[in-house]
Length: 306
Image 1 (cartoon, helix red, strand yellow):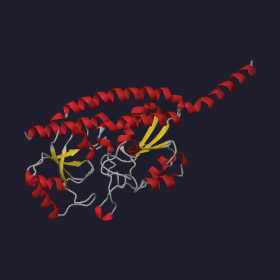
Image 2 (cartoon, helix red, strand yellow; image 1 turned 30 degrees about the vertical axis):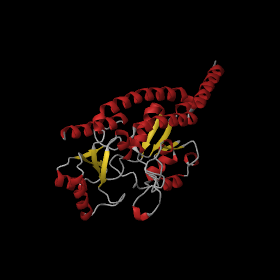
Image 3 (cartoon, rainbow, N blue to C red; image 1 turned 180 degrees about the horizontal axis):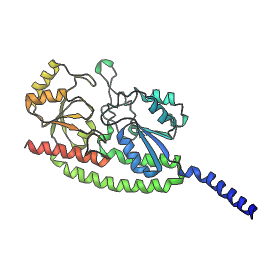
Image 4 (tube, rainbow, N blue to C red; image 1 turned 60 degrees about the vertical axis):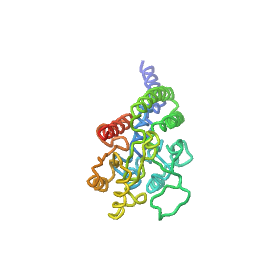
């Protein structure tokens, strides 16, 4: 009897040992909130997501903190924007983390910009032009169409990293695509009144939203990308806006509102703080909420101006 119990116990322990990896979650290090949210949508409870930045942080300028290095060290997948958005901090973190599985070229390295057609690719590179990205404008998260091919790439990577849960990822992906396509159709119908709505932006990071909603960007409050405006420059902007009236002055949650508020006081053009990414305000607490809140804020201002 004792021998049989001992044998049974040994078999149970062996089964526990060999099946334990199936319970391990895929660790995902997402550089920005939008990619963390998408990873959670597709991965569900099979993934553990660490997001490096919040909506209140400039994704260009992040410190390579020990906690971020530790997160990349244990990551199975690094999921970021790419196109040089994180060039000031991600390469340093990757080097210090010493995790070969998440280096460029590996299955554990996924850059969202690789799955989108980038706008504003510069014809020349000169530091005198400000913080210009050589590969083009990296802020692709503001066009919802970009999430469809990216979600497909993500489910392929998750399947490669965790084939045991391939069916779960595929099911969640199909559900996401169906709902997302319905969302896009509804948003585009809702946003028809915004076509050619004239706007002024703080930083040139709204290009993909402009393209999608057919907004008309009059100018930016920065003379060059990343360069704060001088009083003389803002006076020139004031003259321009008097000649070409705008309906809104837009800035992101992580940006200073000072220049936008100055121009608003001079012109009575309303200022809009749009979320820019997931978590940018209380309403934009999901991917769908990001676009829903952005459109509703624009519609409200556009309607008030009529």
